[in-house]
Length: 374
Ligand SMILES: *Cc1c(COP(=O)(O)O)cnc(C)c1O
Image 1 (cartoon, protein in one colour):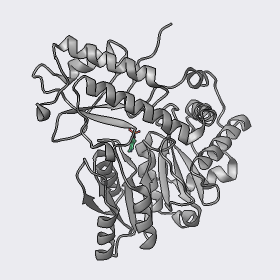
Image 2 (cartoon, rainbow, N blue to C red; image 1 turned 90 degrees about the vertical axis):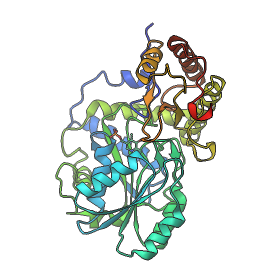
Image 3 (tube, protein in one colour; image 1 turned 60 degrees about the vertical axis):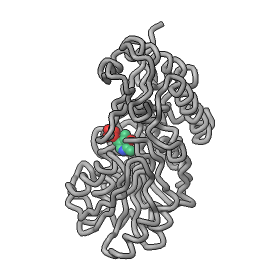
Image 4 (spheres, protein in one colour; image 1 turned 30 degrees about the vertical axis):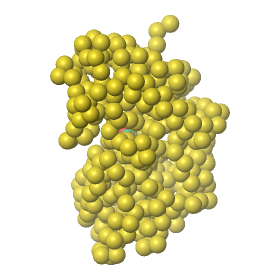
């Protein structure tokens, strides 16, 4: 039986056969059966963050970035002022789209090897009261750093600022509780830790701010308030829904629930992460991050110091064994990334480490030890 390549990337991810098979049907977007799938899915998503009382969830067509852009455009008034806590590539993308939406944007920069700091945020909010909203990335997928959501949310609440959280690569795996962490918008997508297929995002909006969002968006297609109002009224998506993606996500979420929900998923990913780092260490590889700031989602490794190393060849050699690696996203250092997420477990990670060992052999490299550690 042939097996798909195992995707060790930050999405799209390896999905289960059940999830793949759920896509072998055509659905009418207007049909009540499909609308029931959407409604059930929205309930399940709200339950994952314990947000039934405090939040609504609005799905949106497109990749995850579409939903981040939609959230900023919908939640931040045209004359709002957004402060972006920046410790990596996805933060920079959020700042860029905020500027392109025409919102005033201040970027507070941190090193990409460190979490953003709630106390530095507090100083900025004290010195610049014009800030209306803060944007943070929960797990910065660029390097793999876990950012302090709880602390940042507390500072925002204390200062009366809106908080927009890109939780794309953490949602479903790391704990997020809307009863104890106050956010105005939190964004995730189908093709990440819920292990659906890519094609839609979803945004949790705090009920208390939903009405005030009317008219903020300068985009028709990306207006989450409009999408929400229409969906509440009709049970339907405003424009053509990605029907197969929705049904696959509903199927993936039912497997997520059967597995034991967020805590079970975190346990599996943590085991994947530990198996990966142990195996890679035995081959001489060094992770870029200190383990204390590392989320068990995606690991950045230094490139081997051996002059024969070439990422493209290394990638091709791992792919020949059925494993898809991911390039690094740091500007200063040569790195590559390996994801711990998706419908995979310890066996697949052990096989992946073995494939990496064989890839090194192919390239004639004795050890993964980077130059910095020679
Ligand atoms: C994957 C991801 C996104 C969305 O990326 P798309 O390519 O648009 O799906 C946004 N933020 C973070 C932190 C991510 O990991």
